Image (cartoon, rainbow, N blue to C red; front, side, top):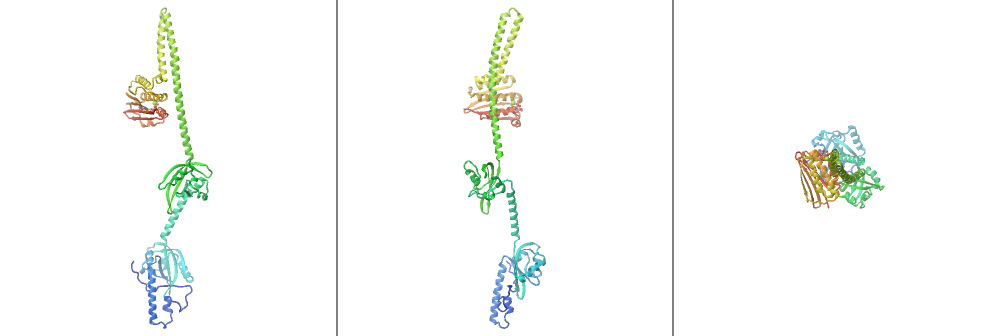
Length: 518
Ligand SMILES: Nc1ncnc2c1ncn2[C@@H]1O[C@H](COP(=O)(O)OP(=O)(O)O)[C@@H](O)[C@H]1O
Ligand SMILES: [Mg+2]
């Protein structure tokens, strides 16, 4: 620190309200002027000078070392006399700036207000000025917490102002206040349920008004609550308590909570660790998702119901098909056979007598034969008897031949092993899926070759149908209007299986179905 110029003035003495009696005062100004003249010896004078020097150096030490800004101005002229290092740093005024400045340059109040404060010092030599605006050399405005003291320098009255720059402190305080207000507004007015939790004690130490309304507790009683008072998990809230108090990182979980009334709500909780005055706390935002959870449960339930209904309809349909197929095959078949025998009898009995009758009965027999074939076809289409009598492999083989014949698309079929024994329900499901894939190939693929593989391996039945057509595209696979594909998926799902539909433009489409079997 640069060495400060030593003021010519003697250290000021604080003026007391009631000045000491003349002659008995030992302060420097009084000592220098009021002592009885002519009575002081040389030794006494030297002694006085020593005391004075000592006092002077004590004063200097205080002025340079004190952290508060200290400056002195003349009571009568208001001119500045001296300021310490802290004053220079605070205001930017150096010692040689001071003689040309007055107190009105430093304190940024109205001169009349300054005068009034100075006048008050006559009655009370030590007054607290409170927070004042000071003006620095560069016109900077500082907030200074100041006090004024009436002092004497020699015979002169002077005023010593001691001040502490609180500009930064005030700025910080108001920033803190603002952020506190902001936080409070966010916390108090937030429509979300907010809780502050002490993870060490598992207690709720803060709840915003929304939380109080949500749980039905008032602010004061809420603060005594333990986490298990609001968590309604089956294990008496233990797992919920642990979830809440898990330290270190933010978390997100669902749980069931209880209100004061005993009502339970499904909630979604977001927690994050916070530090408040050196204490680790958990901050939680709680969303009521009861309606959502109930709706989801209802949706899942209705989906399950729909699936069960679809499966039931399918079973009933399959049973009806089997029944009609049998009826058509057996009843119509027998009737047609009887008719054919009858027409043959007519032909044999009366045919020789009438050539016209013979021609007619032969035509009738041909028609009956064609009708028998139709009946067999219709019956097989309704429910291939092979599926029940010879199994899935045979039914697929028959269906493949039919398809080849009908469409002229070459089919390569592989069945491994040759004999596949299956539960009737699974066999029907796979057969119907197979029929749908063949229909799709005929209708949409534009293919010339189809590869079909039916394989039964350890615990699994798989069917792969791959064509060399135009290739199905993703939007067609996912389209909710693709009812045929949806039917395939649903049938597979009811047997806990999987289905993959893969299409490559210009290369073809493959449908792979896998169903677990015992
Ligand atoms: N093998 C295939 N090759 C090319 N496109 C196909 C094939 N299979 C299905 N698609 C496409 O997927 C769509 C959906 O099939 P699907 O659900 O069975 O409905 P649908 O046959 O009644 O049109 C079809 O309209 C067709 O565009
Ligand atoms: Mg289809």
